Each structure stands twice: as C-alpha cells, then as structure tokens.
Image 1 (cartoon, rainbow, N blue to C red):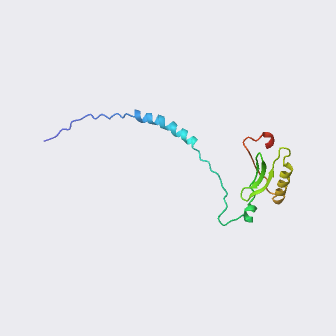
Image 2 (image 1 turned 30 degrees about the vertical axis):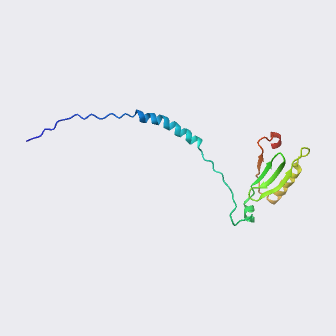
Length: 130
C-alpha cells in the first residue's frame, strides 16, 4: 500500500519583537549616558619604596617642585622629599623676597629644572596668582 503525503502548508510563525525593541530603545541611551559619566581618572603617584629613604638617585631624576600659597603662609616643597621652606605671610608685608631667594637657590642646585606647580586656595585672588 502506498502512502500519500499530505501537503500541509506550514506557515512561518511571526515573531513579536515589540518588547525587544522597547528594551533597546531604553537600554542603548542609558548605556551611552553611563559610559560618558563613568570615565576613569588615573592619578600617577610616586610613593617611596619600603627600603628607600630619600636617596640621591631620586633627586637626580628631577624635582617635582610645588609652591603652595595659603592665607597664612607660602610653602615651598618637593613632592618626594617634603617641605623645603615655609614663609609666613603678614598683612603688612608679603615674603616675595624670601620666595625669590629660595627659588634662585633651588635653581642654582638644579639648573635643568624648568617646572614648578603653583597651588593656591580656591578663594585666592587673581592678583595674588600673578
């Protein structure tokens, strides 16, 4: 006996992707906004080793000189070695001569150094910075 196959028409099932499209419409802008807001900042720290205590090799690398100006004092320091000199500020007299002398002394010891970081308080005036 011979079997006949019935040709059954199989219709492709229609996919309902409305929910998926709604998810993408919300998810893509959210991911783009959070990617912009969550940028990583890398700070390079020069921490001394456990066995190193201010060796002359560190000084030979170069200075990272900072001049910190506050309401009460002007502090000259090197980031790895620490405080070099602190000059007290008075209302009647500013210690600019002492600052200049100290910086000239540092420049005579390290003639190749050309950079210094100037750090001021947030409410410092523009005239003070100049």
